Length: 396
Ligand SMILES: Nc1nc2[nH]c(O)nc2c(=O)[nH]1
Image 1 (cartoon, rainbow, N blue to C red):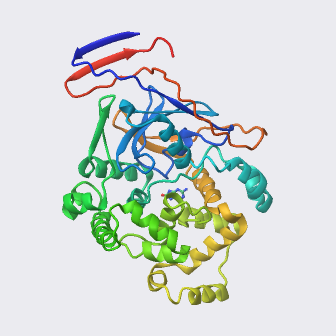
Image 2: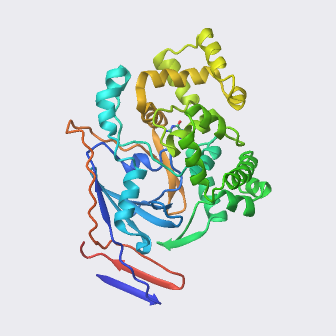
Image 3: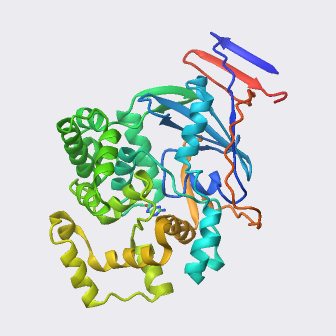
């Protein structure tokens, strides 16, 4: 191993753990920058992804590195070994929802219920279990927006209003700001100047309302509060509550339910999915169904005000067709329809890429979950302020 050290030496080796799964279950390339999560940064030279996240029940963010050396293996580490590998492995298996086999869902449910699914495969795209608060703000940013700009906005929020967590490969990493961080540090004018447009007002108002709501409920954390509500409400009640926040309509609420609250059967409907419903499923709303749905929402005033009943009928049609993991089926269609990923890279640019192609094989549909926490050294530069170290890898 070659070392160049200038200044104070703070060399800490990265320890990697492994998760393994069947081919076709997960593709970081197709998943992490495909429109669900917006704060993963791709390092094109080293082919790894980095972000900050809270691990397990801890309130502290750590910098996480993920790489996929093969179609069936994922390797993970934290910068500075900020938390134990076993906890990180458990957390990532949960975040990536590895307990669900998307290939099994495709082969044994969706294809049987819907012949359209015979011509596509999951391509390693699955639903993530993200932090509900971050998901809420990310999807408020997503209205009339593309993945590149949502990504930019989420990184800007972290950089400006989050806490600095660490430095890795010359880049600073921050936490995602809490509602209190945004309430105390951000203004609508500043967010407008930073390029958030009309969403600036929504973000400020949502942060202010959630900070008050959680305090009144006796909660310290945004996510803790949203998870508590979710555990005590039906889908319709939770959607009604989410839509009480500024900038949250049915589509945003459903994305929070699916990608932040693990409601696997919720199908977010936007223009893309509506187009698919009309084109491939010949959907036409019946007047009687619209009337019946309006009656169902009679006691939900925000839903009545914000919902488009025709789009809600499309959601229900897909739920009936695809079943209890209908939201995952939507995720597969969404990714196929968008056809590319777009995200932050360590060069500072936001780059678009075509989806990677995974050839499916008919191996056993069983998700393997194993953690191997072996120590290994990767080619990496870990710098603390005033220090420069480069390490060249000789062996692993
Ligand atoms: N799986 C999905 N990802 C999304 N991103 C985004 O902006 N909308 C969606 C969606 O409907 N599904």
